[in-house]
Image (cartoon, rainbow, N blue to C red; front, side, top):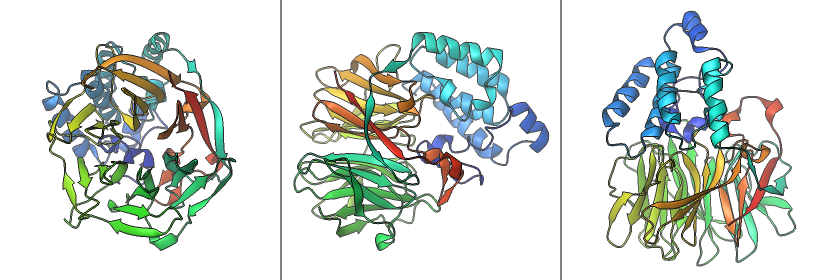
Length: 416
Protein backbone atom coordinates (compact mmCIF):
# COMPACT_ATOMS: atom_id res chain seq x y z
CA UNK A 1 0.00 0.00 0.00
CA UNK A 2 2.72 2.48 0.87
CA UNK A 3 3.93 3.11 -2.67
CA UNK A 4 4.79 6.74 -1.97
CA UNK A 5 5.49 8.84 1.09
CA UNK A 6 2.63 11.10 0.05
CA UNK A 7 -0.04 8.39 -0.21
CA UNK A 8 -2.77 9.36 2.23
CA UNK A 9 -4.61 7.18 4.72
CA UNK A 10 -7.73 7.36 2.58
CA UNK A 11 -6.12 4.60 0.54
CA UNK A 12 -6.72 2.18 3.41
CA UNK A 13 -10.41 2.23 2.52
CA UNK A 14 -9.87 1.57 -1.16
CA UNK A 15 -6.62 -0.39 -1.44
CA UNK A 16 -7.23 -0.84 -5.16
CA UNK A 17 -6.88 2.95 -5.38
CA UNK A 18 -3.96 3.19 -2.98
CA UNK A 19 -1.71 4.16 -5.84
CA UNK A 20 -3.79 7.18 -6.79
CA UNK A 21 -3.25 9.74 -4.06
CA UNK A 22 0.29 10.84 -4.78
CA UNK A 23 -0.30 13.45 -7.48
CA UNK A 24 -3.40 15.48 -6.75
CA UNK A 25 -2.04 18.98 -6.56
CA UNK A 26 -0.94 19.50 -10.15
CA UNK A 27 -2.26 18.64 -13.55
CA UNK A 28 -1.24 15.22 -14.78
CA UNK A 29 0.46 16.58 -17.89
CA UNK A 30 2.69 18.89 -15.84
CA UNK A 31 3.49 16.16 -13.33
CA UNK A 32 4.60 13.83 -16.10
CA UNK A 33 6.88 16.49 -17.60
CA UNK A 34 8.47 17.26 -14.25
CA UNK A 35 8.68 13.80 -12.72
CA UNK A 36 8.38 11.40 -15.61
CA UNK A 37 6.33 8.26 -15.19
CA UNK A 38 5.36 7.63 -11.53
CA UNK A 39 7.39 5.08 -9.57
CA UNK A 40 4.38 2.82 -9.18
CA UNK A 41 3.51 2.78 -12.88
CA UNK A 42 4.17 -0.94 -13.30
CA UNK A 43 1.85 -1.85 -10.44
CA UNK A 44 -0.83 0.54 -11.72
CA UNK A 45 -0.68 -0.93 -15.21
CA UNK A 46 -1.06 -4.40 -13.72
CA UNK A 47 -4.19 -3.25 -11.91
CA UNK A 48 -5.57 -1.73 -15.10
CA UNK A 49 -4.94 -4.92 -17.06
CA UNK A 50 -6.58 -7.01 -14.34
CA UNK A 51 -9.70 -4.84 -14.25
CA UNK A 52 -10.00 -4.64 -18.03
CA UNK A 53 -9.75 -8.42 -18.24
CA UNK A 54 -12.46 -8.82 -15.60
CA UNK A 55 -14.66 -6.03 -16.96
CA UNK A 56 -17.27 -8.32 -18.59
CA UNK A 57 -17.71 -10.16 -15.28
CA UNK A 58 -17.72 -7.17 -12.93
CA UNK A 59 -21.38 -6.68 -11.92
CA UNK A 60 -21.28 -2.88 -11.88
CA UNK A 61 -19.63 -1.68 -15.08
CA UNK A 62 -19.74 1.96 -14.00
CA UNK A 63 -17.77 1.14 -10.86
CA UNK A 64 -15.04 -0.53 -12.89
CA UNK A 65 -14.92 2.36 -15.36
CA UNK A 66 -14.63 4.84 -12.50
CA UNK A 67 -11.65 2.99 -11.02
CA UNK A 68 -10.04 2.71 -14.45
CA UNK A 69 -10.44 6.46 -14.98
CA UNK A 70 -8.66 7.16 -11.70
CA UNK A 71 -5.85 4.70 -12.41
CA UNK A 72 -5.25 6.04 -15.90
CA UNK A 73 -5.29 9.64 -14.70
CA UNK A 74 -2.64 8.67 -12.18
CA UNK A 75 -0.46 7.60 -15.09
CA UNK A 76 -1.13 10.90 -16.86
CA UNK A 77 -3.23 9.21 -19.54
CA UNK A 78 -5.81 11.98 -19.39
CA UNK A 79 -7.56 11.28 -22.69
CA UNK A 80 -8.18 7.65 -21.78
CA UNK A 81 -9.16 8.60 -18.23
CA UNK A 82 -11.75 11.10 -19.47
CA UNK A 83 -13.23 8.53 -21.85
CA UNK A 84 -13.61 5.99 -19.04
CA UNK A 85 -15.13 8.70 -16.87
CA UNK A 86 -17.59 9.74 -19.58
CA UNK A 87 -18.67 6.14 -20.08
CA UNK A 88 -19.09 5.73 -16.32
CA UNK A 89 -21.15 8.89 -15.81
CA UNK A 90 -23.33 8.15 -18.85
CA UNK A 91 -24.78 5.25 -16.87
CA UNK A 92 -26.09 7.77 -14.30
CA UNK A 93 -25.54 5.67 -11.20
CA UNK A 94 -24.43 8.42 -8.81
CA UNK A 95 -20.67 8.59 -9.32
CA UNK A 96 -19.54 12.17 -8.75
CA UNK A 97 -15.88 12.89 -9.57
CA UNK A 98 -16.06 16.37 -8.02
CA UNK A 99 -15.11 14.82 -4.68
CA UNK A 100 -12.37 12.54 -5.97
CA UNK A 101 -8.79 13.36 -4.91
CA UNK A 102 -7.40 11.09 -7.63
CA UNK A 103 -9.26 12.97 -10.37
CA UNK A 104 -8.69 16.40 -8.84
CA UNK A 105 -6.05 17.27 -11.42
CA UNK A 106 -8.82 17.51 -14.01
CA UNK A 107 -10.75 20.20 -12.15
CA UNK A 108 -10.90 23.46 -14.06
CA UNK A 109 -10.85 21.84 -17.48
CA UNK A 110 -14.02 22.46 -19.47
CA UNK A 111 -14.57 18.81 -20.30
CA UNK A 112 -14.36 17.70 -16.68
CA UNK A 113 -16.38 20.60 -15.31
CA UNK A 114 -19.14 19.95 -17.87
CA UNK A 115 -19.29 16.32 -16.76
CA UNK A 116 -19.56 17.37 -13.10
CA UNK A 117 -22.29 19.90 -13.90
CA UNK A 118 -24.34 17.16 -15.58
CA UNK A 119 -23.89 14.87 -12.56
CA UNK A 120 -25.05 17.62 -10.22
CA UNK A 121 -28.19 18.18 -12.30
CA UNK A 122 -29.01 14.48 -12.02
CA UNK A 123 -27.99 14.19 -8.36
CA UNK A 124 -28.74 17.48 -6.58
CA UNK A 125 -27.92 18.60 -3.07
CA UNK A 126 -29.88 16.74 -0.39
CA UNK A 127 -29.79 18.30 3.08
CA UNK A 128 -31.73 16.48 5.80
CA UNK A 129 -29.09 15.93 8.50
CA UNK A 130 -28.40 18.07 11.54
CA UNK A 131 -25.52 18.22 14.00
CA UNK A 132 -26.04 15.83 16.90
CA UNK A 133 -22.77 15.26 18.76
CA UNK A 134 -19.20 16.52 18.75
CA UNK A 135 -15.88 15.66 20.32
CA UNK A 136 -13.63 18.60 21.01
CA UNK A 137 -10.46 16.61 20.37
CA UNK A 138 -9.17 17.64 16.98
CA UNK A 139 -6.71 14.83 16.27
CA UNK A 140 -8.85 11.74 16.82
CA UNK A 141 -9.12 10.85 13.12
CA UNK A 142 -12.11 8.61 13.89
CA UNK A 143 -13.15 5.74 11.65
CA UNK A 144 -15.72 3.69 13.56
CA UNK A 145 -18.97 4.69 15.27
CA UNK A 146 -21.29 2.37 17.18
CA UNK A 147 -24.32 2.65 19.45
CA UNK A 148 -25.09 0.51 22.49
CA UNK A 149 -28.85 0.61 23.15
CA UNK A 150 -28.40 -1.15 26.50
CA UNK A 151 -26.44 1.76 27.97
CA UNK A 152 -27.53 4.52 25.57
CA UNK A 153 -23.90 5.18 24.65
CA UNK A 154 -21.99 5.88 21.47
CA UNK A 155 -18.50 4.52 20.86
CA UNK A 156 -16.06 6.35 18.60
CA UNK A 157 -12.81 4.75 17.47
CA UNK A 158 -9.64 6.75 16.91
CA UNK A 159 -6.99 5.77 14.39
CA UNK A 160 -4.49 8.50 15.26
CA UNK A 161 -4.68 8.26 19.04
CA UNK A 162 -5.29 4.49 18.96
CA UNK A 163 -8.08 4.63 21.47
CA UNK A 164 -11.87 4.41 21.88
CA UNK A 165 -14.04 7.29 23.06
CA UNK A 166 -17.43 6.87 24.70
CA UNK A 167 -20.13 9.56 24.36
CA UNK A 168 -22.88 9.53 26.96
CA UNK A 169 -26.52 10.57 26.82
CA UNK A 170 -25.47 14.05 27.94
CA UNK A 171 -23.24 14.38 24.88
CA UNK A 172 -20.04 14.42 26.92
CA UNK A 173 -17.09 12.42 25.63
CA UNK A 174 -14.61 10.44 27.71
CA UNK A 175 -12.01 7.77 27.10
CA UNK A 176 -13.38 4.23 27.11
CA UNK A 177 -9.99 2.82 26.13
CA UNK A 178 -7.24 5.44 26.62
CA UNK A 179 -4.49 6.22 24.15
CA UNK A 180 -1.47 3.97 24.50
CA UNK A 181 -3.41 1.25 26.29
CA UNK A 182 -1.87 -2.20 25.76
CA UNK A 183 -0.08 -0.91 22.65
CA UNK A 184 -3.17 -1.47 20.54
CA UNK A 185 -3.06 -0.65 16.84
CA UNK A 186 -5.14 2.11 15.16
CA UNK A 187 -8.80 1.32 15.84
CA UNK A 188 -11.27 1.15 12.96
CA UNK A 189 -14.60 -0.74 12.95
CA UNK A 190 -16.34 -1.09 16.29
CA UNK A 191 -19.54 -2.84 17.43
CA UNK A 192 -21.09 -3.78 20.79
CA UNK A 193 -21.98 -7.42 21.39
CA UNK A 194 -25.80 -7.63 21.40
CA UNK A 195 -25.70 -10.27 24.13
CA UNK A 196 -23.59 -8.86 26.92
CA UNK A 197 -22.64 -5.26 26.10
CA UNK A 198 -18.98 -6.05 25.54
CA UNK A 199 -17.25 -4.26 22.68
CA UNK A 200 -15.46 -5.67 19.63
CA UNK A 201 -13.14 -3.61 17.45
CA UNK A 202 -10.94 -4.11 14.44
CA UNK A 203 -7.44 -2.64 14.53
CA UNK A 204 -5.01 -2.16 11.67
CA UNK A 205 -1.54 -0.68 11.37
CA UNK A 206 -0.98 0.05 7.67
CA UNK A 207 2.79 0.24 8.23
CA UNK A 208 3.22 -3.46 7.65
CA UNK A 209 -0.49 -4.28 7.42
CA UNK A 210 -0.74 -5.86 10.87
CA UNK A 211 -4.21 -6.41 12.30
CA UNK A 212 -5.92 -7.59 15.45
CA UNK A 213 -9.48 -8.22 16.50
CA UNK A 214 -9.94 -6.66 19.96
CA UNK A 215 -12.51 -7.55 22.64
CA UNK A 216 -13.24 -5.30 25.64
CA UNK A 217 -15.66 -5.63 28.53
CA UNK A 218 -18.19 -2.85 29.17
CA UNK A 219 -15.69 -1.00 31.36
CA UNK A 220 -12.93 -0.96 28.74
CA UNK A 221 -10.90 -3.87 30.11
CA UNK A 222 -9.19 -5.88 27.39
CA UNK A 223 -10.67 -9.38 27.29
CA UNK A 224 -8.79 -10.67 24.27
CA UNK A 225 -6.83 -9.79 21.15
CA UNK A 226 -6.79 -12.12 18.17
CA UNK A 227 -4.83 -12.19 14.93
CA UNK A 228 -4.09 -14.55 12.07
CA UNK A 229 -0.75 -16.33 12.21
CA UNK A 230 -0.54 -17.25 8.53
CA UNK A 231 2.37 -14.94 7.76
CA UNK A 232 0.29 -12.86 5.32
CA UNK A 233 -0.54 -9.17 5.54
CA UNK A 234 -4.00 -8.25 6.84
CA UNK A 235 -6.15 -5.16 7.26
CA UNK A 236 -9.16 -5.74 9.53
CA UNK A 237 -11.55 -2.94 8.66
CA UNK A 238 -15.20 -3.22 9.68
CA UNK A 239 -17.16 -5.89 11.54
CA UNK A 240 -20.52 -7.08 12.81
CA UNK A 241 -21.37 -9.19 15.84
CA UNK A 242 -24.01 -11.90 15.53
CA UNK A 243 -26.50 -12.92 18.22
CA UNK A 244 -24.37 -16.03 18.71
CA UNK A 245 -21.45 -13.83 19.71
CA UNK A 246 -19.53 -14.71 16.56
CA UNK A 247 -17.90 -11.92 14.58
CA UNK A 248 -17.79 -11.33 10.82
CA UNK A 249 -15.07 -8.92 9.72
CA UNK A 250 -13.73 -7.54 6.46
CA UNK A 251 -10.04 -7.69 5.60
CA UNK A 252 -9.30 -4.95 3.07
CA UNK A 253 -5.73 -6.09 2.44
CA UNK A 254 -6.20 -9.83 1.88
CA UNK A 255 -9.57 -9.20 0.15
CA UNK A 256 -11.25 -11.67 2.47
CA UNK A 257 -14.15 -11.75 4.92
CA UNK A 258 -13.58 -13.80 8.05
CA UNK A 259 -15.93 -15.55 10.43
CA UNK A 260 -14.48 -15.48 13.94
CA UNK A 261 -15.90 -18.10 16.27
CA UNK A 262 -16.56 -16.84 19.78
CA UNK A 263 -16.36 -20.42 21.02
CA UNK A 264 -13.04 -21.65 19.66
CA UNK A 265 -11.49 -18.24 18.87
CA UNK A 266 -10.58 -19.22 15.30
CA UNK A 267 -10.82 -17.32 12.02
CA UNK A 268 -12.31 -18.92 8.92
CA UNK A 269 -12.58 -17.18 5.52
CA UNK A 270 -15.98 -17.10 3.85
CA UNK A 271 -16.27 -18.76 0.45
CA UNK A 272 -17.91 -16.20 -1.82
CA UNK A 273 -19.28 -16.15 -5.34
CA UNK A 274 -16.64 -13.77 -6.67
CA UNK A 275 -13.28 -12.27 -5.89
CA UNK A 276 -13.55 -9.22 -3.65
CA UNK A 277 -11.75 -5.93 -4.11
CA UNK A 278 -11.02 -4.17 -0.81
CA UNK A 279 -14.06 -5.38 1.16
CA UNK A 280 -15.12 -2.75 3.66
CA UNK A 281 -18.68 -2.20 4.93
CA UNK A 282 -20.49 -5.20 6.39
CA UNK A 283 -23.98 -5.74 7.80
CA UNK A 284 -26.20 -8.51 9.17
CA UNK A 285 -29.92 -8.91 8.62
CA UNK A 286 -32.16 -9.04 11.69
CA UNK A 287 -32.30 -12.84 11.68
CA UNK A 288 -28.50 -13.05 11.34
CA UNK A 289 -28.92 -15.36 8.35
CA UNK A 290 -27.51 -13.03 5.69
CA UNK A 291 -24.25 -11.10 5.70
CA UNK A 292 -23.94 -8.14 3.32
CA UNK A 293 -20.39 -7.31 2.19
CA UNK A 294 -19.51 -4.14 0.28
CA UNK A 295 -16.41 -3.66 -1.86
CA UNK A 296 -15.05 -1.46 -4.66
CA UNK A 297 -17.36 -2.96 -7.27
CA UNK A 298 -20.65 -3.70 -5.48
CA UNK A 299 -22.10 -5.95 -2.81
CA UNK A 300 -22.18 -9.68 -2.09
CA UNK A 301 -24.81 -11.36 0.09
CA UNK A 302 -23.67 -14.42 2.06
CA UNK A 303 -26.19 -16.94 3.43
CA UNK A 304 -24.63 -18.21 6.66
CA UNK A 305 -26.96 -21.20 6.94
CA UNK A 306 -26.40 -22.53 3.42
CA UNK A 307 -22.84 -21.15 3.06
CA UNK A 308 -23.74 -19.74 -0.37
CA UNK A 309 -23.43 -16.23 -1.74
CA UNK A 310 -24.65 -14.10 -4.61
CA UNK A 311 -24.41 -10.54 -5.92
CA UNK A 312 -26.95 -8.01 -4.65
CA UNK A 313 -28.40 -6.34 -7.72
CA UNK A 314 -28.35 -2.53 -7.45
CA UNK A 315 -31.03 -2.14 -10.10
CA UNK A 316 -30.87 0.23 -13.09
CA UNK A 317 -29.07 3.60 -12.75
CA UNK A 318 -27.84 2.70 -9.30
CA UNK A 319 -24.62 1.60 -7.61
CA UNK A 320 -23.72 -0.29 -4.45
CA UNK A 321 -20.00 0.29 -4.99
CA UNK A 322 -17.63 2.13 -2.67
CA UNK A 323 -19.59 1.71 0.58
CA UNK A 324 -17.72 2.23 3.85
CA UNK A 325 -20.24 2.05 6.72
CA UNK A 326 -23.12 -0.39 6.08
CA UNK A 327 -26.17 -1.15 8.26
CA UNK A 328 -29.35 -3.21 7.92
CA UNK A 329 -32.71 -1.97 9.16
CA UNK A 330 -36.11 -3.49 8.38
CA UNK A 331 -35.29 -4.62 4.86
CA UNK A 332 -33.24 -1.50 4.04
CA UNK A 333 -29.49 -1.02 3.86
CA UNK A 334 -28.22 2.31 5.18
CA UNK A 335 -24.87 3.18 3.65
CA UNK A 336 -22.07 5.69 3.95
CA UNK A 337 -20.97 5.66 0.32
CA UNK A 338 -17.63 7.46 0.15
CA UNK A 339 -15.91 5.55 -2.64
CA UNK A 340 -17.84 7.04 -5.57
CA UNK A 341 -16.19 10.46 -5.57
CA UNK A 342 -18.38 12.87 -3.62
CA UNK A 343 -19.56 10.99 -0.50
CA UNK A 344 -23.25 10.58 0.30
CA UNK A 345 -25.57 8.88 2.80
CA UNK A 346 -28.05 6.52 1.13
CA UNK A 347 -30.90 4.15 2.00
CA UNK A 348 -31.29 1.12 -0.29
CA UNK A 349 -34.66 -0.60 0.04
CA UNK A 350 -34.38 -4.33 -0.74
CA UNK A 351 -36.88 -6.81 -2.16
CA UNK A 352 -38.37 -9.58 -0.06
CA UNK A 353 -35.42 -11.96 -0.25
CA UNK A 354 -32.80 -9.18 -0.02
CA UNK A 355 -31.38 -10.03 -3.44
CA UNK A 356 -31.89 -6.67 -5.16
CA UNK A 357 -32.51 -2.99 -4.54
CA UNK A 358 -36.05 -1.79 -5.25
CA UNK A 359 -35.73 1.84 -4.16
CA UNK A 360 -32.85 4.21 -3.50
CA UNK A 361 -33.25 7.26 -1.29
CA UNK A 362 -30.37 9.72 -0.96
CA UNK A 363 -30.46 11.03 2.61
CA UNK A 364 -27.57 13.52 2.48
CA UNK A 365 -25.49 14.66 -0.46
CA UNK A 366 -23.03 17.50 -1.14
CA UNK A 367 -23.43 19.28 2.19
CA UNK A 368 -21.03 20.18 5.00
CA UNK A 369 -22.06 16.90 6.66
CA UNK A 370 -20.66 14.81 3.81
CA UNK A 371 -17.15 16.24 3.92
CA UNK A 372 -15.54 12.86 4.51
CA UNK A 373 -17.90 10.50 6.37
CA UNK A 374 -16.78 6.97 7.14
CA UNK A 375 -19.23 5.03 9.31
CA UNK A 376 -22.35 5.50 11.39
CA UNK A 377 -24.74 3.88 13.83
CA UNK A 378 -28.45 3.15 14.02
CA UNK A 379 -30.45 4.44 16.96
CA UNK A 380 -34.17 3.71 16.72
CA UNK A 381 -35.36 5.50 13.56
CA UNK A 382 -32.32 7.73 13.24
CA UNK A 383 -28.92 7.26 11.64
CA UNK A 384 -25.90 8.95 13.22
CA UNK A 385 -22.72 9.28 11.18
CA UNK A 386 -19.22 10.76 11.35
CA UNK A 387 -19.17 13.78 9.03
CA UNK A 388 -15.52 14.83 8.97
CA UNK A 389 -13.30 11.87 9.75
CA UNK A 390 -10.13 13.48 8.41
CA UNK A 391 -8.76 10.11 7.30
CA UNK A 392 -7.17 11.80 4.31
CA UNK A 393 -5.04 13.83 6.72
CA UNK A 394 -3.30 10.83 8.29
CA UNK A 395 -0.31 8.96 6.90
CA UNK A 396 0.46 6.12 9.26
CA UNK A 397 1.14 7.85 12.57
CA UNK A 398 1.74 11.29 11.05
CA UNK A 399 -0.77 14.11 10.64
CA UNK A 400 -0.16 15.59 7.20
CA UNK A 401 -1.46 19.11 7.89
CA UNK A 402 -2.17 20.21 11.47
CA UNK A 403 -4.01 23.31 10.24
CA UNK A 404 -6.74 21.07 8.81
CA UNK A 405 -7.52 19.41 12.16
CA UNK A 406 -10.97 20.13 13.58
CA UNK A 407 -13.32 18.73 16.22
CA UNK A 408 -15.07 15.54 15.16
CA UNK A 409 -18.71 16.12 14.28
CA UNK A 410 -21.46 13.51 14.29
CA UNK A 411 -24.65 14.28 12.39
CA UNK A 412 -28.05 12.59 12.53
CA UNK A 413 -30.62 12.02 9.81
CA UNK A 414 -34.11 10.63 10.32
CA UNK A 415 -34.76 7.45 8.34
CA UNK A 416 -37.73 7.04 5.98
